[in-house]
Image (cartoon, rainbow, N blue to C red; front, side, top):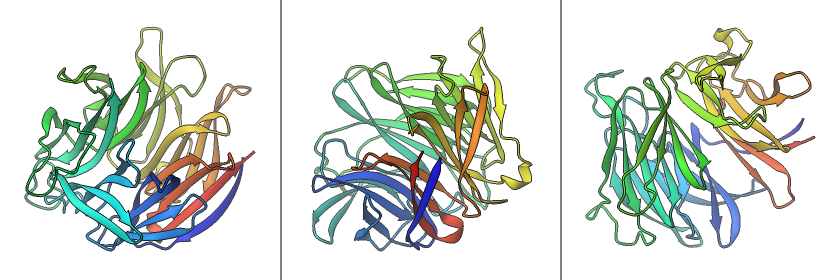
Amino acid sequence: MKVEKKVISNLNKCYAMAELTDGGEHRFLVAAEKYDPCYLFAEDGTCLETVWTQPGGVMTMAQVPGVDGQFLATHQFYSPNDSKDAKIVIVTHKGKDDWEVRTLCEAPFVHRFGILRRGGANYLIVCCLKTGHEFKNDWRFPGACYGARLPEDLSQFNEHNLLPLELLMDDMLRNHGYSKISRGGHEAAVVACEEGTFIFDPPAVVGAGWEITQVSNIPSSDSVLMDFDGDGKLELGCIAPFHGNSLTIYHLDEFDNYVPQWKYACPERETEMIHATWADTILGKPTWVVGWRKGTKNTIAITWDEAAGDYRCEFIDRNTGAANALHFVNKEGKDVVVCTNREIDEVALYTITE
């Protein structure tokens, strides 16, 4: 694997990213964790526009399916200790340097969310890190997940007419991890917390209930499900504990229980606060991109080496402290990974080739 790096921005506490189709072109967004801007980039890394300058506090962004130039984003989640006023907003590109921002729903402590499509309808899942807070590092109020059907037209919603949310599951301590998978022809959410890893399937038909399946009871800060070794079964990749330093992949045994298959062989003092995570197919192989914000602050790509019968790790970057990673294939057919290297205020675009 060859990696070509291009620094595309120096954004203070850069954090969240998302792809966006805007003006019919493939773009991507990068936003900050603190009181800092959000930028729109061309897929080659050229900065095109400033979407907003504040308030920041952006943990997650996601395009509204089928709507050009429109996405959802969290606002005002500045840290686990400062997120009581967090919300999800609707952002619409109205013209050059003109972005409308309206409130979709109030969601205190919302850390992750996703838009899932099933049965011709869009569903919003909202993952709140906690549900209450009275002092620094207060974890007495476990997190929860909420859901709602997301109408195709969001023009009706604003701070005076909020989207109502339905409680799906509560008592989820440190409800931190979220990823999306394709499952049975529809999209589902993988949610990770102290109680383990859960799959949330949106309603099969409008009006039906959500289906929640516990995958494991292993405490996890972030989890991914992917068939890394090609045996037709999904491996479970876990970062543990919360903001932890342990990186493990579990394999289904003959009784359909997840058992450890591989652990990153590095002193855990060197992999503190593992945070960036993105599982996708890169260079034709199932790949898990992982980065950590303390210790050596490295970012790696993990793949299954069939010849060796084991996992292989290759470095994407070192000493950068990635908070999040995003992968896409550009118009030239090349694999691109974008990382928000939060610990050095650097947004970097990596072109990955054989």
